[in-house]
Amino acid sequence: MSACQRQPVAETGRVYRIGYMICNSEQETLHRFRPMTAYLGKKLGVTFEMKAIDTVDFTREAENLDFTHTNSLLYIIMHRNQGVDILAAERSGSLGARAKGLIITLKKRGIRTVKDLRGRTMVFGPALGPTSYMAQLDLLLKNNIDPDNDLSAYSIPHGSFKHEKVVYGVLLGAYDAGAVPLLDFERMAADDRIDADDFAVLAESPPIPYCNFGVTQKTDDRLAERFKEAVLGITKDTTVEIDGETVRVLDRANVDGYEDITDGDFDVVREMAKRTNMPPYQRY
Amino acid sequence: MDRLDRASLLALAALIAVSVVLMRGHEPRPKPDPDLQLRIAAARTPEARAELEAGATAARNLIESGNLGEAEALIRELQRKFPYQGEPHMLMGDLRMRRQQPVPAMEEYKSAIELDPDYLDKKTPRFQGKKLKVAVGEALSEIERHLAQKPGDAALKRQKKVIYYLYRKIAGSCG
Image 1 (tube, rainbow over the protein chains, first blue to last red):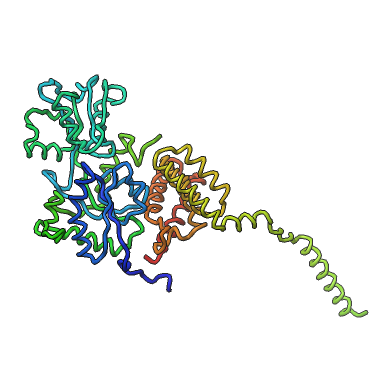
Image 2: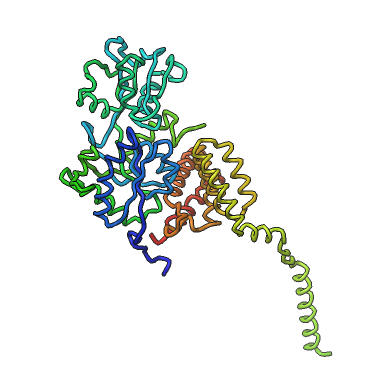
């Protein structure tokens, strides 16, 4: 019977790690989610340590984390390879808890359809971004365009703020077309950094889940449930004291809120990964 | 000698004959292989554990970076050197999953959990129950797909039994 005794929800004195996938830059990611992390720690009465992790390194780090904050592609990879479970979906922008990938071009290029991209140049966002690479690859393949053989060239920018670099790359004429998430395109237009009317959207992907919180398999189930409740309970009025000031948690995170989601909702991402030979279904 | 004496002698003779037959048919218990005992003991030393851990870390890095051929060679070496440790089998299962081979992965995971039950104990840092459940689910889907085409296939039926054995083991923890 002693083998069945439940452990305490949160071990006293233990530091729990939340891994945040780096979005745009490490500095921006930490700035956005520090108040969120502090709020969750106070709400749950546990000590959280946040760690900003590059998308390409995230799956290596999963075994050292308790909670994850990633995009939907990283979630399905870690669910299959490391047993990560979904907790909550993040809402942001016009599609709420969903996201789409766009293929954009400048109107003055005269490119009208995806099929017209044959022999042209293209710039993609990060390869492990579902709406900056995978969704657009799916659109190309559906139009019988294999980027490796049917584009004259393609590239992925180095460094931080890749989504913005994609848009500027198209705007400044360096590439014929670009792969960008709808949300980032909308934000740049809303900030007047670009004029959306200069661009034509050649195609957009079906909606897929946006970013999310997950829990690793070693974390106590009851702590995970409390974490989920705390996240889902965050509203626009939720604040936390941090560095001597009162900060609105969602405003700082640049997020509209969180909602419940199931693992089955990610099957659309799984099917896309299988069609595009992306992890976790990549065949070498 | 009366009839009772003769009957007793016959019974005694029969008993002796049966005993001789049984004794001849008995196979002696094999003597323990001294080399095997030494290998099992050697695998438990701190040096051996450190070697296994270093090899496992290297194998995991190779798997994560997509170098599956090199990972497989390293894991096979670990399986040869540490035949009674679960970690090499767990790693081989992970490799098989990366190769989209959930049924062979399931066989490796079965070996891993039988050698090291901690993989299914949520109270230990080695717990891998949720990952195993996903893998077993994929293996079941694949086996059922094949069984739909070959309903009488004995090998597939055996594999399905293994699946449900694993489901029972995975579900067996206290929560």
